Length: 509
Image 1 (cartoon, helix red, strand yellow):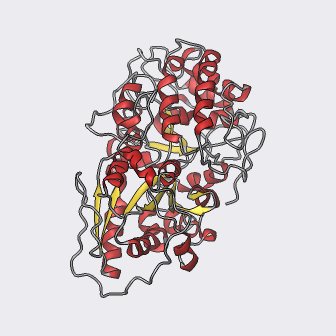
Image 2 (cartoon, one colour):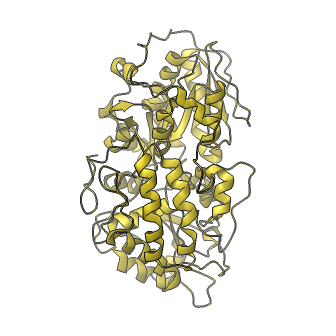
Image 3 (cartoon, one colour):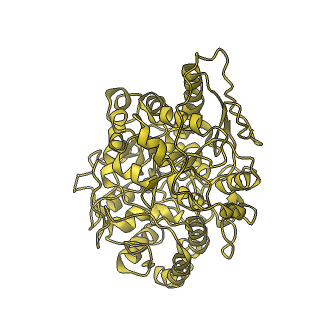
């Protein structure tokens, strides 16, 4: 998922992303790996369920969920029966409409249109069914999270859902997800010490666990090995502590990789605003205060980070401008881009160039990345809660995490699997770069109004990316709008473990 790989900014200057009737935000950015395209129009975002700037991201029908407040406790779990291995398994990756939870011992497991990224889910469902006799219907729905909310409101939800961690606070507050505390208290598999702490923390809401950690997907630099060799340029280091790889070195590299005839550019940058965060954080900026009660987009660190990115496009032109048409990354037109491991399945399918990965460059406040981690949730309306948690234990346990790791879509959240030889030495990817990135994760400022905040910023940012307004003008417009959203937020992610006045404290790994 990654955020979506997906979630846009201004219209694509090279290739447009493939059009789809229903497209989740994570699908959009995921498509980077398949198309090499990174810039997406605000109109496309609205088509993905972002709504308009003046309306909440949750639809009126979905808002009915609010009649059930987020639980603070749940019934004590009963021991799921141990049965003989199934001789037939109902695992059906298929299109919507998905089946609903019916209480007959068959679990419905839904993912929001992950496509090639979903290679781990069907095998996991099959293996779990073989070991327990509990049938699993796996459905890659293609639905956005707002559509899931409609399922919940109408009582037609499934049992287990894959979500982006930044989305769960909003939907858990609406009463969509089961509080897992009573189950975890009895579990020998799902315990916090087994997972990267920062990923576990993203599954917590006010100290209660509402999701099982799935994976971490930190952003790194992807680069075209041929273009670097042809230009005689040193590739991005794999060591995140390499102080020589700073913003100046990154700019120098991008300039050497850009051609005067504008057929090749040094880098392409996602215009989804959250992909600005590594630059903002490494410049010492924060988009909000530690308590997530005050917007601070109009502060020097944020302004400087966005100014740097705008300059890459309009001052230095190492990132293509909207009217500069050229081949994409997959066909050799862009030498670098930033994304997470969720782009790997698409690159393997579509890239016509040899590629590798390296660390994000260091700013004056250090080197930081964003990590759109993913997780598993159980719908509060599930008729199979005990069996659903048993499935979560499998998915987050060693066996399920190993299957996930071999699918090459993310870093398993379970530390023992992520640092294992079997995971790190697989295939053609230097996975250690992504694993090391976890120590450089910042935390996004997530509240229960995250979907609305996300869509609002996304729709306001295009003029800045297109050089129609200055960064100063943009943040002057943006800050009071975001402040109004924060004022109505009721639940906030806890940033206290890593937040510093300038930058972040490295999370414990």
